[in-house]
Structures are given as C-alpha cells and as structure tokens.
Image (cartoon, rainbow, N blue to C red; front, top):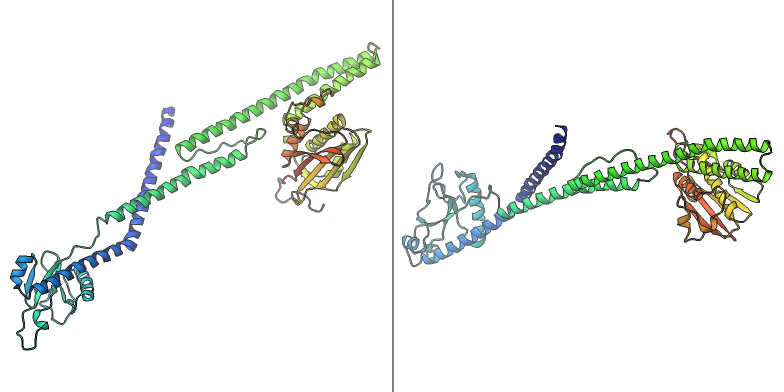
Length: 477
C-alpha cells in the first residue's frame, strides 16, 4: 500500500499543479479581459457608434431628398424605411416631450437614453440643422430621428408640411459575451502569463538551485543535505539524479578514506614490530651497521608513506581552525628540515588556519625542494594583495623545477614524474596533499619561475571563525 501511495503521489501533485496553473491562467485572462474592456472596449463601442451615425446620417439625407418627390408612405414602402409623420412618434413615460427639448430627460431605458444621446451628438456633427432624437418605447429597440421638413428651406409664404421621423434601430452595447477579438487576446495573454510563471517557478528557479548546488560539489566535500525535489517532471528527475550522484560521491569518499586509513593503521603494527626486531638484532650483533642503516631507512620510508596515506585520507579536515602567527609556524617547520642552506623571508602575519595541515603542506614543499631541487632554499611569507585576509607562502630552490606542461600531472595523487623517481618514501602524494590543503584554505597551489630558480606558491585565506563574536583574523599585519 505504501508503494502504491508513493507511486500515485507524483501524479496527484502534477494534476494539482496543472489545475493551479490553469486557474492562474483563467484569472490572468479575466484580468486582461477586464483591462481590455476598459481600455479597448470603449474604443470599439465608439467606432461602432461612429459607423451607426454614418449609416443613419446617410439614410436621413437620402430620405430628405426622396421626400421632395414621394410621400412618406410611398418612401417607406419603396426604401424599406420605418417612417412616422407628426409631432412625436411615441409618448414618453409621462407623456409627450416638448419640441424644444433636445432629448427627453426621462427615457424608459437609461442605456437607450445614453446611446440616443451619443447618436444625436454624432448626427449634429454630420447634419445641419441638428436633428432631434427620441427613444422608442416600443419594440424593436431604437430611436426616432427627426428629418428636416422640405418646407424649412421653402419661401415664407409656402405651406408648411408635417414633421417626418425616421426610425433607427440600436443594438445593445456589448456586454456578455465579450468581443471575440478581446476574448482571444485575453485568453492568449492569460495562457502566456501562466506559461511564463510556470517557467520561472517550476523550471528556472529549480535549475538555478541545482546550478548552485553543482558548483558546491567537491569530491572531498560533496555535501550532506540532498537537494529538495521540485519543479517540472524533467527538473525533478534531474534533481533525483543529482542527489543520487552526491550520495555516490559521499559513499565513495567514505570508502576511500576508510580504505586508506585501514591500510595505514594495519601497516603501523608490523612496522613497529619490525623496528623492534631490528633494534634487538643490532644489539646482538646479528646485523652489520650498514645493514641496520639500510633497514632503518626502509622503515622510515614506510612510515612516511603511511603518514601520507593518513593525511590524504582526510585527517586534516577534522582539525579545528585557530588564529596562529604564521611566521612562527613556518619558522618551526623550517627548523625541522635539518642542516641545509635555507633563507627565511617571513612577514609577521596572523591568520585563522588549520596549523597542523598547513605545516604538513609546507613541509611537503620543502621536502620536494630538497629531494628534487638544488640548494639553497628560500621560504617566503607575505600578505596577499589586495585581500586583507589572504596569505602567500613560497618555497624556492635553484633547480630546474617542473615544466608547465607536467605541472597538472604533478598535482594528481599517486602520480610521480620520471625525473622524480628514486626517492625514499615518496608515493606521489606530496604536491597533491599540499594542493588539497591550499584549497581547504580557499587558495591554490601554483608554480613560479624567475630569479634563477623554481618556486611553488601556496595561497590561502583566513578561515571564518565559528564564533561570530570573535574576529576571523587579525588585520593589523
């Protein structure tokens, strides 16, 4: 039952999401339709009224000309017009309106009164004299337009004729259903708005979140929290694959760390027993001094390899960061090198670092310089410009160094260049560990040339303080 419920839930969520965006599209369409009715609908009504006024004006002019030769009854039969003869064609609500009133103040239909008033205004612009317009109480819906009598332009002694009224039907103002053009524009705008909102919320935002999560993934620090699934079906599938990749990276990293740590710890016990037997054999004169020295050198090499394995397994990541004087730390590391020509150029700096890991990285660089370079050596510490939290550690020697093309290979773990083979206790992890520790401090490891020698620079930044009340680093260098 749990599996079936879990399999139905994505479909239910997809249906609910589709319904929500459908409702959003309808809401946006209704809003756009209301705006279009407010902005464009009035213009359409005015255009229709203009067309209606032009039609009525042309009919009035033609009817006035035809009345000079035909009677109103004959003209109505011939032209299919609805004509009325008399003072007022139809009574208004309270009786006949006076002749001098341009439009009755109390029309039975307020909408009809408004249309009639607008029609009269437009007819006054087209006809002279301005005709009177009266609403029609009876069906069909429309207004009566008074035409100019032929006697109005006749001589004063001519007999006056009766007033002739022309009926003009008026369609109701468009209300519902709305204009098809406006309705199509509103539905299209609503669908487009809902589609853009869908792309922004269901596609672009989850993809942006996935992009940021991908930028933070590291093999040594893949992350612990899975990315929440969201967005469209394709984005959710991509997010699920990303979470699976992160989990595989974490599992692979744990297995690698466990394997290297297990190998290193398993080697320590037999190495300790072997060293004890060598000491006992040397004291019993069972080994010569040369054999004892060679055996001790081999044991030292194995212990160095074991320490490198432990360090590469990630032991430095659990070390807390503390504020230390870097110049004193590097001076202590340089003192462990031994009796070799070594020049120190250390600027007094205090930074929050992992001291043991940083000391191991600088020690590896000094050992590489001694093993493969040419004395004298030079150790430099200076502040990074213009970053007030940064620092740069440089190790120089007088050797040929590593070629630029071979530098990326030298930074890979368990990789030893041909010119570097033959050392004691080296497994190709020295530069890889130094590069990892530099990246752990927000920096990098890069090669340097110039000054008649070869150098390696380890850059980094002061690590943030876990206590917000404590400064991350001392800026008074």
